[in-house]
Image 1 (tube, helix red, strand yellow):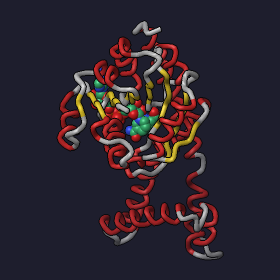
Image 2 (tube, helix red, strand yellow):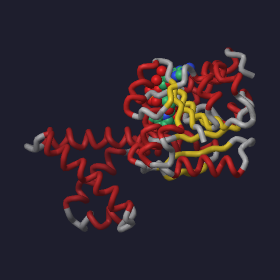
Image 3 (cartoon, protein in one colour):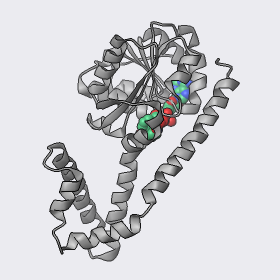
Image 4 (cartoon, protein in one colour):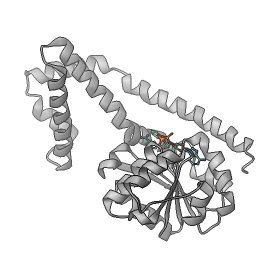
Length: 277
Ligand SMILES: NC(=O)C1=CN([C@@H]2O[C@H](COP(=O)(O)OP(=O)(O)OC[C@H]3O[C@@H](n4cnc5c(N)ncnc54)[C@H](O)[C@@H]3O)[C@@H](O)[C@H]2O)C=CC1
Ligand SMILES: O=C(O)[C@@H]1CCC=N1
């Protein structure tokens, strides 16, 4: 099976590297392309068996499964470019949240699905979020689930929880690394620990916590209970978190959803301006 990747920016690169590293897809199965060809050539140097397509259309012609890894507002242009290659035998996969599979089905004859990845997939871990269009048969669903299972734990989601799920799965690593960074900076400001030591300790702490949860020794609440000895020091810290975190995460989800709805409106305009319908 030939797999196409249109757009080898940050996420297209991560998908290529991860699929190859997982052993699920061999490099010679891939045809990739990028508007700025240099990015594709850099990958070709690392994986000589990968083929570079001249453009999106060539990739779509040559591939059965086509991942579109561009930014959402670049989709109309890509879809226009690949239109001559789009027919019911092709399987188009979008990795971006603000465009629904229904919207894509309206503008292409391909089978359509969405697979929202996470940077965690680079370590062949974390979740991915799948949504299937109405033209996908069981066989197509199996193909995509198998691909994404090689690099992640896929979950099929309904459209109405797309944003929040992507906030958790895809944005989550950035949110929590920011919080850990703040944790480190606070430690450095308030004590004599060096930034280097605080970073090492905090990084090991978060890796260890992931392993602990993975092994199933504790859940998030039981872990807290175990560490939080009654009348002890952790409890004092938790009280500060309870007082100061307040509605912070409510605001975060409100903001991401507001931006999402704005993006969706821009997408509707962009799709109609390109007269894709
Ligand atoms: N960064 C992340 O952690 C995640 C990103 N995503 C989604 O991944 C998508 C891509 O994001 P990034 O990789 O961060 O963006 P990026 O800007 O790094 O990559 C997009 C690439 O597409 C190329 N491109 C644009 N139009 C093209 C065309 N017509 N033909 C060929 N190549 C073209 C650009 O040159 C660029 O290299 C976005 O839609 C984003 O929502 C999804 C989950 C996680
Ligand atoms: O389309 C999305 O939801 C993802 C999350 C991070 C960037 N893009």
